[in-house]
Image 1 (cartoon, one colour):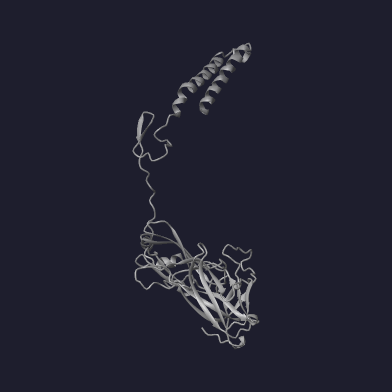
Image 2: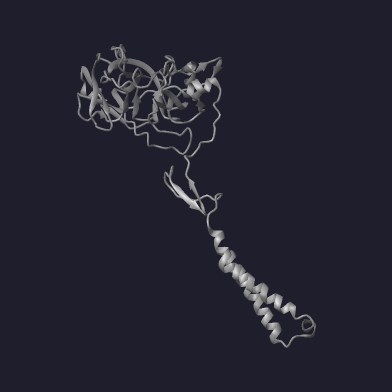
Length: 380
């Protein structure tokens, strides 16, 4: 269309010029050559005729033009000029088949798309361990114990050093199986990863045991950790270990628990209870307990004639401004033993799903107190 307007406009201009020369009285240099005026007029007329009749044919599609039809038009036809053309199916560009090793990995039913090993709070080093886990897949299955020293394969150490010392780590992996959708799972350090996850599962069977250990609270990053027995800063703390064992039945998988919290209640006195207790080496009050993993609840300790527990106010949604923030110890919940003078302390520790608020498992502990707290013997 723009070409057509240009031709007609140019032709009109030439005709107007010829008319102007004729109307000006034939200047001397033009009067000697009248054919020049006629040539200008004829040229202008030719441009107008070409613009009106012949340029229209140039808008018709030729065999070399691409016509946008949209959708799947394989097998349909279109006309370009006098020719009829048929759509052909799209032909994909040839792709590099890759090495025999990459072909073997890509042909597996279990495919590891991405895997990383990092601290539970995302701080410290990040190690990409995708290739490591791909090489460990055997018969479209992957069984892997999540430990720092286990990321070795083919003479290469994919985790050359601890990503974040004194803090729990986790393995996050995205995979697909049998051409299905991508799935992302996480396993904490010390647990076992099994892929693909079996469709045959049995309910979680939580085991609970108690232990007295010397621990210390570190405000940065805000965790309770184990201390050496002779560390003067430590507190002799009552811990409850929560174990989610592997099922004894072959061919089935256990159940991984997500977003669980721990309640601690001194049943002698209604007021002494903690709704969200601390977990050992974890600053979040909600954790995941994978099948085969074990975590410890910080129950409480004796001090100044009282039994003291602590509320953990930090949820996974808490996002500090610093990589290693300062987190003050949560509010204390205390039972004053001197005033109450009980001979037995009854403690109930409940493992609860934060989503449904349902108790998954609980354990009852009894502490027999001597005449003086200082004579208490810390036994499991």
